[in-house]
Image (cartoon, rainbow, N blue to C red):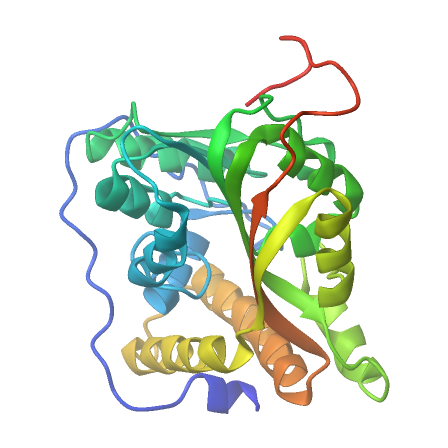
Length: 309
């Protein structure tokens, strides 16, 4: 699938932004850097492009209804707490709060995204129930037995220290609590080396997925009971293609500012590489649902100075 294919398809109306309410100034209201787009940074134009592709509040494929549907199995309620790792600007997080009444903490690497997520929570009067923090996932430190559920969506595949993250899943979850992971995994690498090389070059931060079997083994080693380990690539692919096709139909020739055009080309090239790798089987998208069967925490003794979230 080429760039033209990714941006073509049936005509659809672009996503309309919701009406703004009074809120603190957006962290995106800052001067455009003269050198143009720097991959891995979050100028307002990048946010605008991705929300047009994936929907309001979304920076990855998956509508809010899809994400809340994933979490139905977790029996969330206003008496429960959950952690959303890789929350971005918090659109799906706030949707879960609205649907389940759950108290939610969201984590993301980027401080600008976190500031915007908290600003939008304030706009929606959810600033007490959907709160976001900047976190380095490589050194994650969770409150012991702090959460009834953890959602980790498209975050684990960008972490080198996966063993540390698995340990923190155990640390942060209450006994019998729920863990849901949705992410890229390594598929058939042999014969797809060129596709994978191209994919690694497009990713900031670097994409470094594990094999599905390695994730399952790591969870079982930590006394998780795995209920679902499913390849959902065929469910995700139509959403990717439809999002970019809809976005392509919304573009107006000759009126795209230079910085926005740079961002569109960068994002489209990244997703073109991802789609090619998904179609070849070099990578896949998996969903895991597991529960923490450990009745007692083992290992180090946590103190208030050890954990952050």
